[in-house]
Length: 188
Image (tube, rainbow, N blue to C red):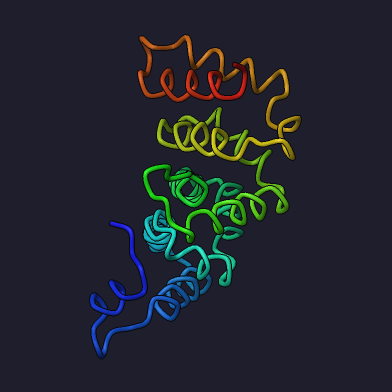
């Protein structure tokens, strides 16, 4: 469910931890953790918070988008999966939600991801052995592709991979559907 300040106040209660503080605690735990399993759980948790536009300002303030991008470069496939999931969640447009919050924050997240070199990292996830990572990468590229980064995203190698996924309905319906939606949006 999408949050607003009033709903957040009701859910947190009088003595609850404010959202910014809670997210800061998660980031600090991630940075100080030496356990791969703990890091995986924390990034998965942060990726869930990235789904709600209410959290976008906090995530940008705490450099969580950059943390997600760092996770994509790790050899740990779970960190890659949760990192690309967080990227996808933070850039996915929500057309049914017509709020000022969504309209202002989605482009900012996409711009940060692009400016931090995220597009090539997301493209690398298209060849991940983890199905969720591929799905998240397809979704992220679908929403990130715009006039300012179209050339970077729509290179021949990337388009070829996306076309192969679009034709792979027997292997994975989700790959096929996401890839076909990408092609329909950016080539028609």
